[in-house]
Amino acid sequence: MILRSITLRNFRNYKTDTLTFHERFNLIFGDNAQGKTNLLEAIHFILTFRPFKQVSMEKLIFLGENEARLKGEIDSDSGLNEVHIILTKGGKTVKLNGKIIYNMSRVLGKFNVVAFLPSDLELVKGTPQDRRRYLDSLIFNFDPAHLKDLKSYFRAVMQRNALMMQKEDPGETLDVWDEKIGELGGRIIKRRIRIIEKLEREAEKIYGFISGQKPDVKIQYKPSFKLDSNFEEELRKELRSRFKQDKIRGHTSVGPHRDLIEFSINGKDASVLASQGEAKTLALSLKTSEIKLTRNILGRNPILLLDDITSELDERRRNFLFRLLEGFTGQVFVTATTTKEVLRKDDKKIFQIKSGRSQHFSQQ
Image (cartoon, rainbow, N blue to C red; front, top):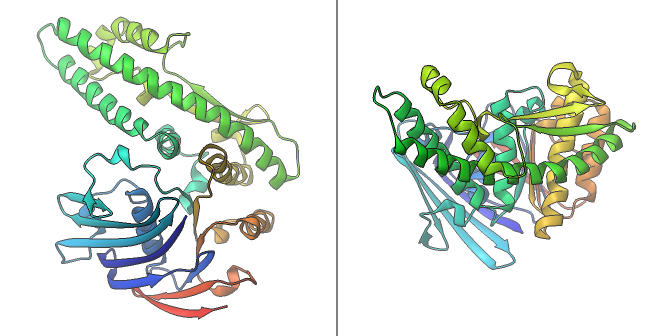
């Protein structure tokens, strides 16, 4: 899979620009606040149909303009694909090969990306919501139905919460939403547990390789209720038993939206007790594991995006990352402040970014 080119119009700080990429390695350099990350985000948007983080579409549009447009050409197993994305203050329109995509779950995972962002290094010590979101985003790549179930699940939880705000007895209507939440929540939990089993095995190996140690790395899924063999039924029972308590609080206190994902290193809760170095090593191990999972599950390389991440790492972790890039046979995009930060001797394209404009600096 190769991103051949991208065209940006009124996206972030880019007024208009078109870039054609090298099929292996692309270095994007320039001073801070010039648009390097914005370009990487545009690439991510073209390949995954979403920006790096949840944000209103209005914030992605060049100041003073009404819409932004992105266009990308991607070579994949199915041939050459064209992606067009139109962003307005009211939302986005995505076209794949000329056809509007109304159901995003049908196209998620068509193009696979692994992004290494500075914020990823805070994943281990971040919020429970950050860890849930990370895990769910990973699952999207392999099972697009997960997105549909998550959206339906949160709608059902909102409906249940609204019922609890009413003075009158919700009666059988509450049972309907409890059934729905139990059904959807059970599927969501099963997928999360399955991906954790795969992710944990790879992350432990990679952590050991980076650190030179033999660590005991665990990823534990800690549900907000007691899990039994029948996730759906146990969740429904818990919802019923907590109704009075939830009604007082005004929200649903049990389900996948309240579950925890805990990382541990040698038996220690990494979010609390891991050093900054250990936390960064684990985060780097998790992101690197995504590459292996993509190969194992889908049989292909993802496209790698690395946003100025080398500046956040010490020598040992940078050396690991450079060895990873040297051995990687897919397409890579790296941002840096100077060309000296990323040493690579083989063929590549280098782009310099200044004030939202790219200059094809050189090709080696």
